[in-house]
Length: 231
Picture 1 (cartoon, helix red, strand yellow):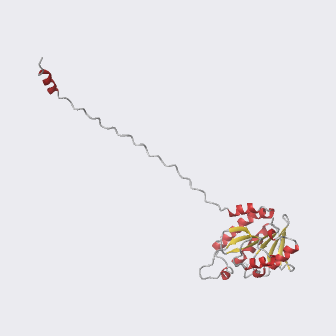
Picture 2 (tube, helix red, strand yellow; picture 1 turned 45 degrees about the vertical axis):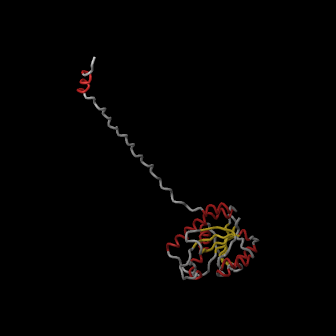
Picture 3 (tube, helix red, strand yellow; picture 1 turned 135 degrees about the vertical axis):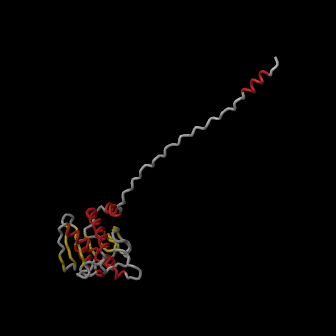
């Protein structure tokens, strides 16, 4: 069961549309869809709200990405939330825009927000919802790439991945982690093209072979042989 959903990003107008804020985008959309008000709480250094039907907390750290762990540690400690009850939503360079994947634990691949959270919670065993933003082009640093705004086509793909992720959040909040993974990780396949049955070629009728004509016995020779017989 998930009791705390954390969206990672950087506060401030200059960052709100950058790739690094993909985690913010999902949590903000979920709050908006469910009527949850995110209020700034100085005690937790974050925007905080509660999804009343499930009792889950929503958290957007306002301490910048590399210090994301402190608000998570403080709120989780205050409400006695275990690491395995925490879901962290973040941008993922290893996946293309449009891809969303769920897992528990694992490496942090140089993500500063995850690094700080893991240090503060003293474990990697929290859940992670990874939203693909794509790899930077050759010669570009990942740190610069994630602080840029994605072009419209990429943003649309990321939004589609967020929609798919929001659809499985009720399963996560209810504790059906495997069911949520199965749903999220199953890619929709294009419908198979219907193949028309192969047309049978009309069977070729065997051509009648011309009958061989038996050689005719020359009548003349036959009568000659009969008449020529001696009695």
